[in-house]
Image (tube, rainbow, N blue to C red):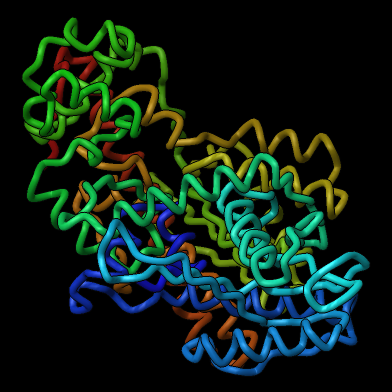
Length: 493
């Protein structure tokens, strides 16, 4: 069995993903998404920037990864020569047979850098330490597991465990990894991974949209989860709560809807138990259920209302599109304004254009979906020196529909994202596969190619987001009105 660092990383993130990478039917695996390809490109650029700034004299091992034996031999040769910095190397170790079988376990790691330092090794009075270059902003546990793997393999190769290992993150932040803590964790993860890959059955499904979003197996796993009425599809069911529900014999959404909440209260508290059961009931019966405090959250109204959505590029710390839909209830007209920075240095201009527009309607509430829009107003107002009083007037008009939804109503949905809620209400985005991540890719394509088609896609996606926000608000308004008339629950059309 060949166990690479990337397979171990997949296992650390999701056992099922690692298993499917080895044994899964490739027809069930979707192509890598554009945003994942973008992240890989950014990771490569980040590594190149680190090399140029800190290790310009590096030597690269050019052998392809698919030829891992030759790549490992080339890396050994450079280490034996005492090269100061080795980039794109390979470390290999054969651990022996697996559980008495004839198959052997071969560990393969591809550390970004091997740095020469004073010490002892089988080659002489020098040895190497491994360095990982990661795109994240913080030293995640999976990064430390990989760092420990590289240290383990390097120790076996040079006959001396490295004194340290490092992780270089985005913006050049460097972290040391305590091998006394992380080598045992690596060994435990390795043993669990091998055990999982040797089992004849697939690991159980658990759908976690944030973690699963970029996985090529997501569509396959999601279809299975739906067919099983899997509990992970219920918002609020975390892995630990899932284990608690399993211990009570609750295995499907239907069984969660049927059980007495007192049975769950001892394991997770009465409030959580009631919340999960009502969510399951809403999903089984396909109806929205108002919470008791709904009448304490009136929706703002006005003859003119604004619906606000942003497209942003985190890597550039840039908000490149500020979209506003103006809804005039008196004339029954809706008009979309998309303030788009065709170049990153136009952010100041689109911010001022946005401010000028919304100031034309000083009494209009500004509806948005998430905290991001408010955070962005604060950031851009500070960055471009908008008067404090004017900034506060804008913020006072903002109304977060996401917060309103999750505090007042339980919907028959698997996620309280704007797209999931709007889809449930019958709204569809015009472009298949459109998303915030895809918008970021389109913006990169525009900057690279100058093809204005990508700008049209971004504007259309943002306009659809604004429409979806309006549809959600309009539905909520109807729901609350029916509550005032005495209806406790409303089924969507």
